[in-house]
Length: 87
View 1 (cartoon, rainbow, N blue to C red):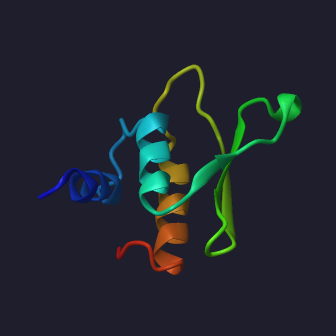
View 2: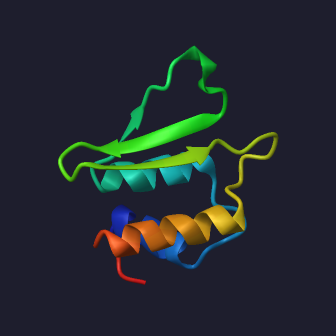
C-alpha cells in the first residue's frame, strides 16, 4: 500500500489526531491548492480545485493542530459526493 492509500485510509477512519497538515496533503492528492484570502482571512483556509471548479473552506485549528471530528465528517462527505474517495 502506497503513501496515498495510507493517508486516505487513515482519513476515512476519522481519527481524533488527524492534523491540519495531513488534511492539506489529502486535498493536494486530489488536485486542490490552498487559495489566498488575503491578510484578513485569519485562520480561514480555502482548498481550490480549478480543474473541477470546486472549493472547500475550513478554519485552521488552533491552538491544537488536530482537525475537529465534525470537520472530518464534513470533508469526508464532500470528497465522497465529488467522487474523490469512497466512504
